[in-house]
Amino acid sequence: MKSLKNYLFLAFTFMAFSAYSQYTEVINSNRPGVSKSAFSVGTNVVQFEVGPYILNEKHQLQNTKDNSFGVDFAARYGLLWPQLEINVEGTFQSTKRTYSSGINEDKYSNFKTLTIGAKYLVYDPYKNSEEEKPDIYSWKANHSFKWNQLIPAVAVYAGANFDTKDNPFTANGVEGFSPKVMVATQNNFASGWVLVTNFILDRIGTDQSDFSFLITLTKSITDQWVLFGETQGISSDFYADNLFRFGGAYLWSRNFQLDTALTFNAKDTPSVFGVTLGASYRLDFHKDKEEDDGTSAKDELERRENKARGKNKNKRKKENLDVDFNDEN
Image (cartoon, rainbow, N blue to C red; front, top):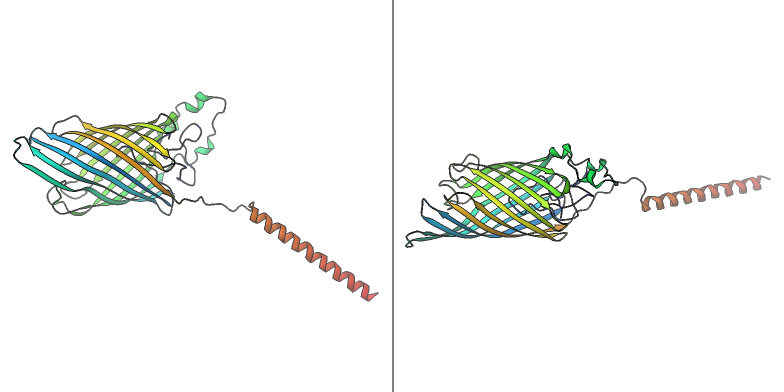
């Protein structure tokens, strides 16, 4: 598992994509972490990603303590073209809030986010990477830094949020549908390093119009283990924070992945500490398009049959000519 923010496939010495398809032999999950890969799951692939979590928050100024349990989820599907993916993503959370006095206690639950959208890869610098053949005589040459690795793959995303009325996790008056857009970039470096960045405008035009960014760095340890670190910045009039995540993932099989992560911040309004356990599973209905170059067994059989029919036809024609000649004599 050379990267879980990528397509988890090592092409000899570094990550490389086919010029015609983003489908990979092993699952391509956005987990672990929160950032989104620039690449899709592949055409006719249905993928589910889910992560139950516990979250503790303590607000010094408000003298409150929140103990929460929730689950984030995603359903992804590669549609029509290798570059296109449609998805549904969301987070549902249940929170118990206690006050320092110990007298009052609030309990509430709802969707923190619920979004449907589409992502499209607009630029893929790796599509012609098969032209860069590995040096079979030099391990160093295959694992050394290459300047063209600084050019990232770029994807764009557009979606719509849906927020219910009087949602305790949103600002007052935020309800119904609102736009969300994102630009995602991805660099695949040598030796299993992958860098992903996301720049997001969320709930555009509402009283909770957020700008956030994510930077995620993953490192393959073995073919099945990967570690990651991530930072997330959030800025809006409703909420602002800088979050940090660390964790890892394990590739159980080519279609199933497990992951875990810790989340925390460096402030006390509120302080944040969370633990996530996650899993990703795909239903693989992908089939590569076969180009008909006339070399298949079926084509060869048809050629032989046509050739045999031609020989029989010429033989019958010759026999008829011989008969006619004999009759005239």
